[in-house]
Image (cartoon, rainbow, N blue to C red; front, side, top):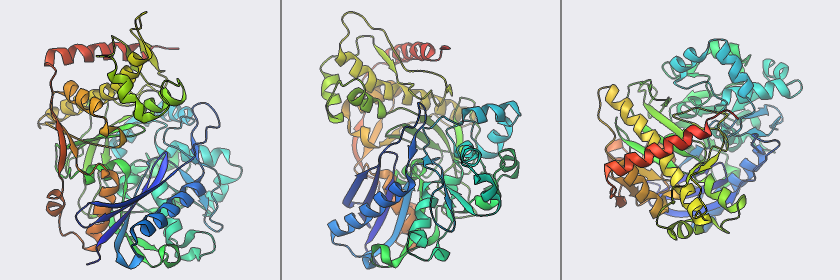
Length: 508
């Protein structure tokens, strides 16, 4: 048995490659920063060629660092920033526009028209989502509408659309410059397709009514496969040999899989640029009554549907970046815990970082960031602590909504939360999270669970693993944060938070 699995983790702020052994342990990591492009306020773009170049470079670097050859890899898995939209020319392989990133809000006017056309119910019923510029559909519509000649070319079959996974697979399987593009695979997996607002998660197929409403040619769309499947093979010239691409999942569904949350009621929260909480609901498509969305979880077979409830926090760890780059309160993100711990609490300061509106469970796109509760005694340390705590408050609101949905569906409230992502290493934040939730917060030994999920999916396709039970046995906890705050105090703090959110949602 080939001993290694390579995970390509293409994120919002960086491209990373992580090499895992069969036991799910990290062997080596390589990472490159991905430049951000901000053409206008509320617009966020990436250069698709930069996505490809940085991802390929890190894959080569991690293999060189570990002194591992392509022949020692059982398979490659891909996990990616979701909703980010790429359109490229099938013949030249050139993108026709920068990738429009999931954070981008330029398509809100199109969302208004869809709502006014009465499509909100259809979107919710078929896709599990809400009509919002967060998802890929209206970003794709904007490109076709605003790039000269794009819609006509799309209807002639000249253009391809994909989320970042599709773009990388197309490149890896032969679409990159100087190689035979006839070999290139135009595919995606069900978890990424489910984030486009164009995909019927009941039938696992594209929705004709939504395509027609946005005038999107079906021929642009990739073929949809289970998350563990044969997506193609990495071209031999790229990494030194042909390698099976056996696993693909959007970053949050991949993290759910990497956390071994395989059964209904299990939940995880990823603390990254944003925060993303998912609760597995098994084969049951549950519609939230509390502002969450329903999404397809990673699926290991075409026949077995898997779903999750999800809540998205648009600004999670990015609030620490704002403290560094906008407020210049710290020089490095790693300094935030020390600054926050220099005061015993936030001194009544509440920080709602609604820089790009509010996501679940409020869905208020025109909300704006607010800092409330300031006094003459407030310091930059209080603001820093409030900023850090805002990540926990937003996540607590999500878990409360999930637990209410679970009980309404006849289940039990979430009894523990598994955590991952860059900010989960912050002990102050994790303890405050456990205090607000009143349940244990479990940090695993391997916090690279997003990449690990992709590696596990690829390993299943390659026969490295025989079952989900085998993968569950590999999950190991590094630290459990247990609540120390009284439930009464937790409720008081959440009430203050909700009051601050109400200020952020007031019309400007």
